[in-house]
Amino acid sequence: MLTSTVCAAVSAAGLGIAAITAYRKRFLAATRIAAYSLIPIGLVMTGVIDWLAGIVFKPTVWAGFGVLALSFVLFMTTRAVERRRGVGSRKERRAAAADRPDAVAPVASAPSLGAGRAAAQPAAKGKGAPAKGGAPKDDFSDIEAILKKHGI
Image (cartoon, rainbow, N blue to C red; front, top):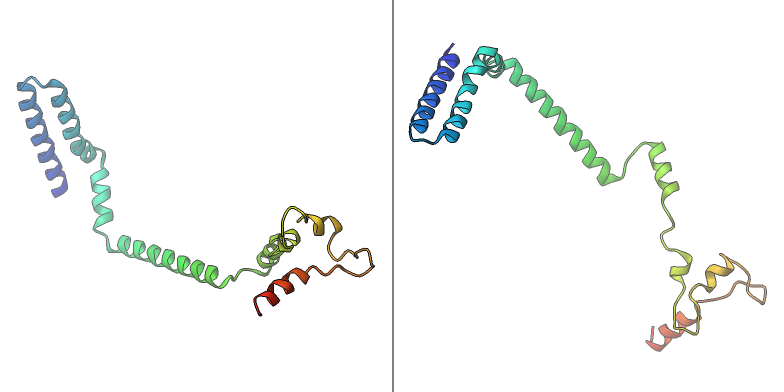
């Protein structure tokens, strides 16, 4: 009841301001002010204001919003903990492990020492492919030489 009276007063004041604006020959602004001032009385007439007042002043509605907020906080907390720990269902962990590529590609781990030596050479032979002598080729000799040079 009080909300209806307040909305009617606001609409009446807005229509008064629109009339003064129209008197000053600013018809476009006056029409816009009149349109805005008719909104509160229209909301009262359709019953929207009573519906909103019923929602705002009921404690059970606010308790419901509190329960929804608590549910949201709990859900987001569990998601954050799962992401931090990397926990998921067994099916999700297996799918993630199967989709994850190797940490380092074989070509990327081969040393590239210049144009005289092709970096793609180990990839062409395949992983663990025997060299000309029948044993796997030892590519760590370059690294050993660098470490010895630096005294390591």
